[in-house]
Length: 325
Image 1: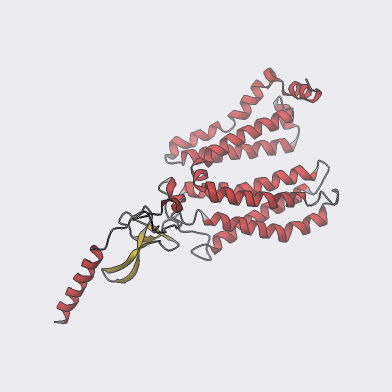
Image 2: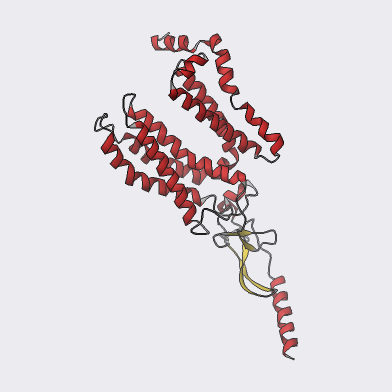
């Protein structure tokens, strides 16, 4: 008799779940309230908890997948932005005769590296250099706040949640740790070793960071989804432009001009790494035997510049520009 009652009760529960109204909206889902064996009871349609997203049946499911290679490359790009800006402003404000630039570069690298490690350690699962994520399916996954349904055109059902967990919020956490570590370490270092600079110039690279960190935060908040799909092309275009500008400004017209200073080689190899990063991000290395040969294109822009520099004569253009012609 008890077995029959349990069977009838289970059938009634399943029937009750089945007749619940379907979820409206693209990102609204039903949260699991109770599970006993094969019996599952779901709540009303609404927002999914953090770390979950809706599936095709409109049920909230935990994010248990590992990030794809492209996801890691995106996170790497967002992590490189503050580091590159740190290096740029350190070089800009240190001056040619300052011996503190190298130590500040190393400190900035240490700050960003430690911030990245701490961010991974505090992310779910806590304490390991690993994260679990939900797969990005389309651009709208980054902007769930734009897809809250209004069934009666009056009341809005708020279903905003991080469908791309944790690719959206983890960047903010990383920037926060970068800022904290910079404020703890950089002022002490600059005060100790930046003796060749005036008192007003010593901390300008730090002041610059206080400007570009809010800008990067707003950029991620507003354009995170667009950056996710566009960052490989942004890397390629910017690395090509900056390499051409640097080589022309340094009046590099042949291989000897390139090899005469170690700094020029460092800049060249850094741009080659960015070229390779962009190529790998675009190809995603889906077919290894077909995509790896594309890396042979990495030196092509620099070689093209050296072969064609004699026709454009960058040094003559720069001298004419300085003279106002």
